[in-house]
Structures are given as structure tokens and as C-alpha cells.
Amino acid sequence: MEKIGIAVIGAGVIGRRHVQEIARNESCRLVAIADPSPGSASYAASLSVPLYADYRELLKHERIDAAILCTPNHTHLEVGLAFIERKIPVLMEKPVADDLESANALADASKEAGVAMLVGHHRRHNPVVRAAKEAVASGKIGTLVMANIMCLLYKPDDYFNVPWRRQPGGGPILINLIHEIDLLRFICGEIVSVQAVSSNKVRGFDVEDSAACTLRLANGALANISLSDTTATPWGWDTAAGEDRELFAYRPVPTHFFAGTNGAVTMPDLTMWSYQGAKGRDQPIHDARLAVPEENTYANQLEHFVDVVRGSVRPVIDGHDAARTLAATLAVEESARLGRLIELNVT
Image (tube, rainbow, N blue to C red):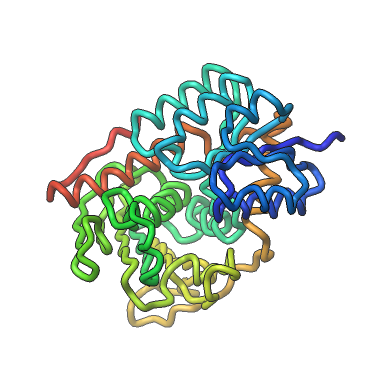
């Protein structure tokens, strides 16, 4: 079978990660890169592929089967539409867009044109996440009652040398929390309301550095998420899951907790907790590990994208699904700003 020819638009950190995975994958090949930054020329030359400063020039001169779009969030609508209009399937990095109107416009365009769009919420491709989802959905833990998620990390001072990271929209709500919101939706179901508070107490920038939120799900369960990029802890997915050990120091501790009437499961360690006989706080509760293979989540995502491009599967998260994740994340930001409950339309 002929390899899928892919262009990567945006050669920053995540764009280069996608390039690495393309090089390792036997079902696809890198055709070209588009990126205007000064260091991109030498990078493309090292890969022996053409470089274009503008993605529109790439579209004029290259024949591609698909594209991975890793451009700044505010450009997602413009860039995404350019490829969709040319019937080129895309993997759009998260968030699908920087506002809900643009997200829905992209999702609608993809659907109306019949052009597949996979959104890069890569954790959905992790076997750990899928096992936790099965434990909740199958009723192994009984009726889901509560989810608790910790996203507590420490970003070094030089991370904030980039000006937009100190400004509204550049904080951990839209950068980090959106991952947790998507995991919560994927594993537990739709979010119907959000109540949140935020703080910039530690750094004093114009954007939050910490937030806490309580969410109600459509199935009646509740969830709490603790978020900060100023805390010295191991309790964050990036360090605990080990998906990218070159960027994040690996420390396997539980960070996600899902509790039901018959038991509980934690991630990423996949410990199942349950009573063996009578239930009660005076009874011993037992633990057991769910066994799943350790896999490269980004490689799984790329393999899924290849299948999407070939038309053999539907995207595990398309534009409309990703727009709902964005809506819930923006609701956290809005609730913290206004100091009130925000209800979501999930119909």
C-alpha cells in the first residue's frame, strides 16, 4: 500500500514531535514543512525535505495526502479552512481553535466538505486512558459518583520569556486544563455545569497561575480539578504518565481518581479498588493493577490519523467533539472571571 504523504505546518516543539513519529511510521512519509521561523531552514535541510515560509506556497507546489497543523491557536481557523477547502484531511493540534465560534466553523466546514479532521487530544490514544474508560463505562466500579483530577506542576521562569504566556489566554487553563477536561469528557461523559475560581497570586501576571473547579456531569456525577503551574509536586499527567520522558521527569504516581458505588480506579497507575465481600468503611478494601501494554501515545495517534486518511475509521475526536471540550474549558475561565456557575448546552 502506498505511503500517505504528509505535510507538517508549524515546526515548533509539537510539530517536530510529529515529524519524529512520521519518520518512524512505515505507513506515511514527510513531504514538506511550512514554518516562517529562522531555524526552520536548517531543520528542514537536515530532513531533506522542502521548506516553505508560508503554508499557502506549500499548497501551490506540493502534492500531499494529509497535513498536520501545529500553528498558533489564533490561526487554526484560517489554516484549517485552507486545507479543508482543498479536500486535504488534517490533524489539528489542540485546542481546535482559540474561540468557540471558530471551532464550530471549522467543525462545520469539515463535516460539510466531507473532509476528515482529527484533533490532537493525544491522550485519548493512550491504552491507560482507554482502560480507565472501560472500567467506568462497563460498570466495574459501579455507578460513577466522583472524579478528582490533579494537574499540579511547576513551569520554570524561562518558560515565561515568551510574552504571550504572561497574558490572558496563555495560562494553564487553556494550555493544561483543556487536556484534563477532554479526559474527563472521554472517560466519564458530558459536562453540564462548571463553577471555578482562579488566582495569579504567585507570579502576579495578567493571567491565572492556579485554578480550582467543580463540574457536574450529565450522568449526575461530580468532578473536581485542581490546577496550577506554580506547584512543586509530581501530581500531574505529564510527569506521572511518562508519555514524553525527554521533556518531563518521570515519576509514576496517581493523579486521576474515579470513584463509584462498587469500587474505584486511578490513573495512570490503573489501580482498581474494591471490596471482596461486604461493603463498608469497616471492611478491608483490596487493590489490583489493570495490565495494559506501554505504548507510544503519539505513535498511536499518528497511526490512527493514517487510518482516518485512508477512510477505514472515523476520527476518535473530530471537530465538533473537540469544540465541546473547548466550550467546557472556556466555561471554567468564564466562571472564574464572573464568579458564578456556568451551565453548558450539551444537546
